[in-house]
Image 1 (cartoon, helix red, strand yellow):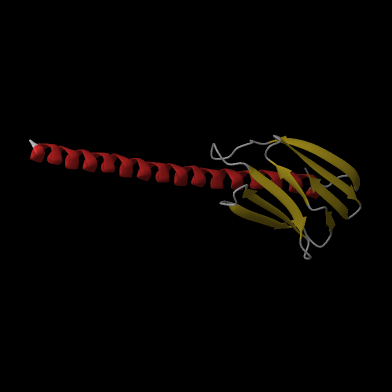
Image 2 (cartoon, rainbow, N blue to C red):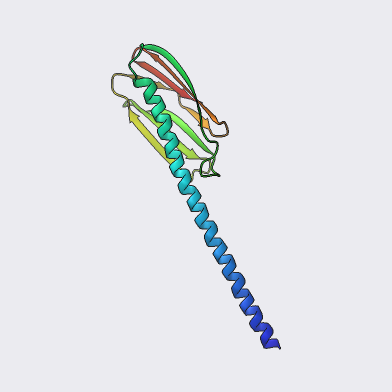
Length: 150
């Protein structure tokens, strides 16, 4: 009787261990899958914001203009990640968009050269995904272009 009880306990413990290990494996795969989706979604958001900026700056139009655009963006990417977008410029006339999740597990940068014709004045500003609306403010005065996001 005792040997049957010990055998039952060993089999039960092995079965329970297999359930825990399998569950852990699927949770890890699920987390990695969500992170991969969030990575792709963040890149798409950065591409979209970049397109909006370039579309506004590079269109031939009146040299003095102010454009304020409100863009609705998702508050979560990969169904669970909050994120931020920052904009800045480098010394060689590049607009730099930096996107990252709040836990910094995803960190992406896009840059685009706008040409020597323009003088960029980009206020370092950022958008937090807790707000679903990104406000893009572009002021163009001759060849001077000032850009902020919030």
